Length: 274
Ligand code: 13P
Ligand code: ZN
Image 1 (spheres, protein in one colour):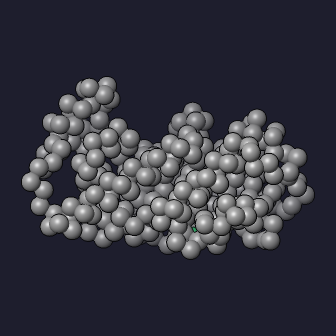
Image 2 (tube, rainbow, N blue to C red; image 1 turned 90 degrees about the vertical axis):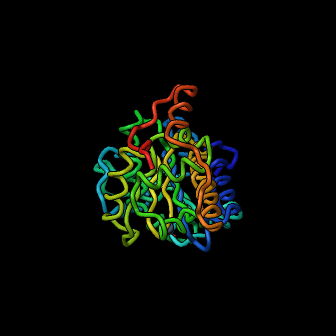
Image 3 (cartoon, rainbow, N blue to C red; image 1 turned 120 degrees about the vertical axis):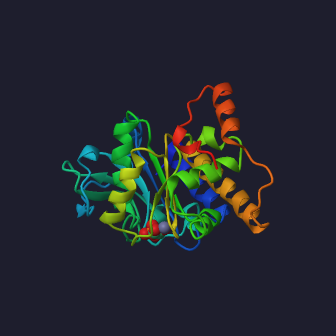
């Protein structure tokens, strides 16, 4: 592999940066990237097209033939930069959208992340709803977001509003809010269906007592979204830890004023009076 190719470099860098943020204990978290046509041409020479197809365990017909770079199941984010070829892979989806084959990577064996059904179902929804723009799906285990799922009601309106209040730029960065999936068994089609349904509306979905999924156009946007959400969650945890009694905050009126100046339209469902 040529590690100077931009998407390859960016993929590895995100894994390293996520690890440095403490969002990837052990093998926690996973990352996937949908390759562009010209990027596929640049990596074909490194691919082995004779590997067997294996079932995805869900169906993603709109991703037929697509190529993805994906982290391996059980692999540690901390090790991605040290030995990419052992920890990540490039896969291709078959012409029905039901199977995948490994073209490159995982040189010592293994398979793509156990959350492949959720990654691919999210990619499929985002490919359609963003007119082919979103290409990165990122799952991590950020401490403060997870902590909040034990003390806030698992209601997307309350979560979104509470996090918006913690940092002025939040409503600009995650304008459509954050979705929430109640606790479910990870790693299968059920949780993939629940998550991708919410990805119709949101770019970020919380898995209660587990972690966060974010979607974006590129690695910076997706990592930045994750970082912004977790930062505001950290502030909220600190506020709650100081007794949780806010003497002042950003109000619904303040948000409406912000929307005018920033020329955005904030969904009214988050601007309720408290
Ligand atoms: P994988 O090692 O299979 O990617 O699983 C990690 C994880 O975070 C599961 O939700
Ligand atoms: Zn996880």
